[in-house]
Amino acid sequence: LLVKRGEHPVKGKWSLPGGALRVNKESGEFDATIEEAALRELREETGVTPPYLEQLMTFGSADRDPRDWTVSIAYFALIAAENIKLQAGTDAAEAAWFPIRNSVVGVNLAFDHKQILAEAVRRLRSKVEYTSIAANLLPKQFTLTQLQRVFELLLQQKIEKKAFRLRVQKAGIVEPVLGAMVVGLPTRPAQLYRFVKKKERDLFFPRSLAFAAKQ
Amino acid sequence: LLVKRGEHPVKGKWSLPGGALRVNKESGEFDATIEEAALRELREETGVTPPYLEQLMTFGSADRDPRDWTVSIAYFALIAAENIKLQAGTDAAEAAWFPIRNSVVGVNLAFDHKQILAEAVRRLRSKVEYTSIAANLLPKQFTLTQLQRVFELLLQQKIEKKAFRLRVQKAGIVEPVLGAMVVGLPTRPAQLYRFVKKKERDLFFPRSLAFAAKQ
DNA sequence: TGAATAGTGTCTTTCAGACAATATTGA
DNA sequence: TCAATATTGTCTGAAAGACACTATTCA
Image (tube, rainbow over all chains, first blue to last red; front, side):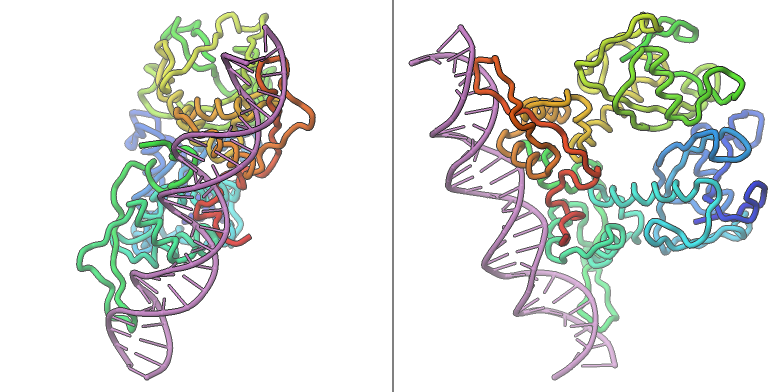
């Protein structure tokens, strides 16, 4: 989700949504934390309020902005495809969604935002495997095939169906929604599942060294 | 590795080493990047130059410092026990090493540094398992038993010897140093190993979903 | 019935867990 | 020889890989 910059430098270029911290109590919008500031900027510029937000990394150097030494605290957010509608009436006229292919977006980005995006993609790819982060990219209820498609998209490889299903179910991160099936298609109806809320750490990793110890 | 604060607020309390970015070209010490600044502060306050430095997380809010809205970009460094001597002649008179037990150090820390430390320990524990980060806590050459001790310390659990050795060797992250053995002890001599430099990502995880695909 | 997708059975291979056996050294 | 630690052997069980099979729906 990119916004078109209305100001120099790099006016007219697409960039990641963002802006300055509001640390002044007198101003109308005051940020209590950096995370609040990230949510506020995203909302102001795109109208989007994401269900998932995670601090990514901080970028700071003398030369990433031609004007001055700058520090950017990057966050990354996830949202299900069904909820990506940009709201009118905000700055959203200048915001648009772009597909990512090979960690890269099809337009040139301002400043070092290409690297920031690449880092976000890397983080997402790595976390999908050992957390239930994929939950934020799917509707509340989904089929195991849909879940597998998300994994395959993010991991960029085919996964064997039986192994995937066994593992996801054994990990206990999903549960079937009783009686909820996908119908109306000329195929066998698919069972709908939902994610089970759990502590992040006991997901997946059935046989990695750290979790091999006796319970 | 903590330093004793010489200034108010919280004067006399121990805190993580750190300081302000130097973004002014005119001043003597100029930081080109935040990482350089982190190394400079560590060197100035403790005399230590670590072989490993990784950005941890950025902490920023209105209330973490009583004086003002502050942002701290936290890094964590690792260094082998054999190299932990603090150099005299620096500010190191006010620096000292403290043991960590259960993610916590035995003294009260300034500001929110206790949380920062806890986050660093969490990061280290999580990375030890799927990267060769432990290399930075051992001498250049080490025995597999020494390596296992590091893993057990960090993961806080016993690991079965045979499984550990098989896995470490199969992952290809270590190689024996030909002819190098630990001698002089009244035990069978132990083979010395060194770490193999590799891309981070193809370590460990022999059978996790992401890496299960055909090569 | 056929096409399409959902879901299962089952055999093989790999690796962790457990535990024991063997190997090598200095005192 | 004994104590101590290094290293390997081997059996078992669990999970992944591969692949084929069955199940259910609509047209």
